[in-house]
Length: 221
Image (cartoon, rainbow, N blue to C red; front, side, top):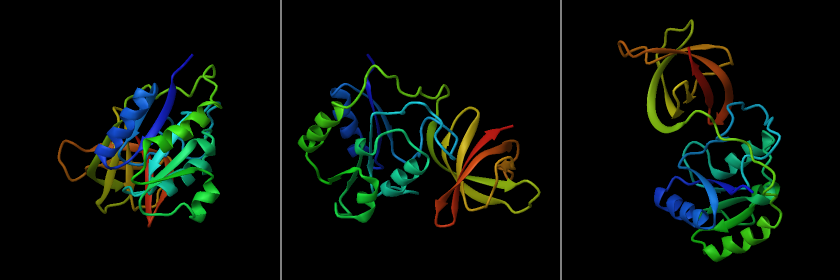
């Protein structure tokens, strides 16, 4: 029998650690992120092709950088995330339970500050529906590291040096938020204005990130 798994998102590290500790004590494998990551398991942003869910529970704060909690849950739903809607939760002190977006998402809502008794009652019910004999989607084989570093770049066949934000990095690539329209397969030169540190990368996927920005997965050449 496997452990239950929860994916947590909250940009306030103290809050994130408290919730993480709660789930750990409850026996969960916990994946915690300070910034929204639509899917920590797959680079593909078109549609989830996994046969099984990547987690049993997803909990996200509303007020986060780059993408709020509702936008995150909507993005997961558009991709066909296998985590049941009833097993997803939004936490917020800024919006009300009557929000139309919450009704459309069918997720549970916890108004901050909340009591862990509320979460426990919800989990008691949801855990009855979890099949622990069914394996979840495997973790990435390659470690990814959260980042908040500004990165200069030039798109292939262009001369203008622009600036994007590295959301996460790995040994083989980078997830970059920028304002330049792009397509999979395009070549990007990273840090072209810094001698001896520039790298060439190929865009694997691109998705809109709102407000004229795009999120892209780049693989180093």
